[in-house]
Image (tube, rainbow, N blue to C red; front, side):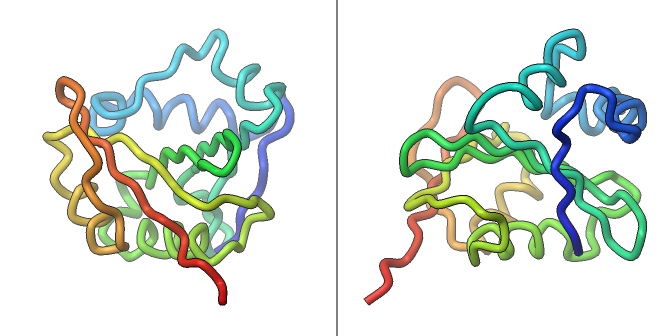
Length: 146
């Protein structure tokens, strides 16, 4: 799998990503204001948006925001590629430092009805850190090197 950072609002894959973000099975968990979203992720310091490509196919995307030592993360796997281990691979790659980002902890929010994501992140070593309305907070602390 490769990760290609979107650095321009004119990236050729944005129309396709917009279509995916509008799909009911995605939009119920990830909501974006398309008028401002792409400008935000391409022009904001410490915000990174990556396309996830596997064997030449766009299979997902990751939005990352670095705030000090904390990495906030959203992952989207395109529905037709779900349940193939792609989410697991993405999380493992981020945990292993494949992307050039320095962090001590990863924090995510998951809608409490998104059982498959909850199971995935728990399997990958994330721990429940709290609840705010319907959102569950999870945290992963990067192991300290000795």
